[in-house]
Image (cartoon, rainbow, N blue to C red; front, side, top):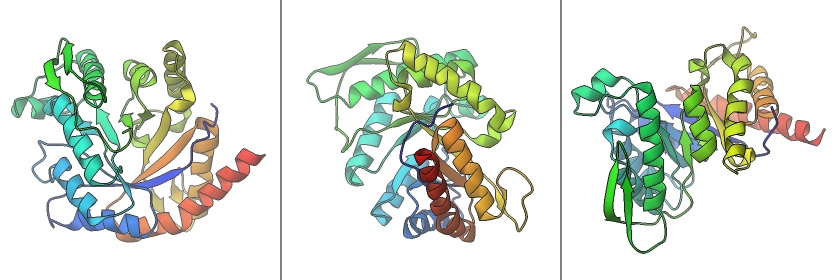
Length: 298
């Protein structure tokens, strides 16, 4: 697959643990201090050991100045689309245009149903996400009149638009199956999967990217308009033992390969360890940027 030419982003994927209360916040602040570009948090509202993700993002925004923020990914079935749009726009305004919106169709349906959410089949959840994206984008439009949408899963009957976000918030979709990948190509600004959830590992990425590109082209979009980001995990070891298990230079070479061969331009490291975040920022990110820059010149 081609390199889509986006500037590289490096970030963290921190567990939003509620105890100790400030731990996730301090790791996000550290990510900014060491020069990373993005701080993200998973969203599982039914997990009582976790902070509420919107509240956590707002607190982190107040503690930081530069780093971009995103849910990774927001749980749609427990959040109404217009409220998602308003919350995202508000936080984008308050943070000076630093929010991006990672969103997913939902999982852990027993837990969702226990909180009063609607239990959906896999196909229904994709259709619901499609409707939600339309409503969210409509809410952000700088137009008079209200949001009107009559869908199977979501409705809006003249709800007022606004507030307008400070910048064009990217909608990044966590997608794995063919229907979600095609939806990403048609509607999303970014693709945000986790490498550990992709059965078959990196060998499957070409086919998944192809579905996104084909759907984008069929919708009249340029495939390169869709940023590809990847949640990753790994371990720093003296000798290489596999994908992202080895010394920092090996990590850089493998991430550069994902950028140049599969078009990924965002790498979000899942870790709650401060030393790992520091090493990722100091050794892996700059080396990866150098390798990708050299590869793009050749």
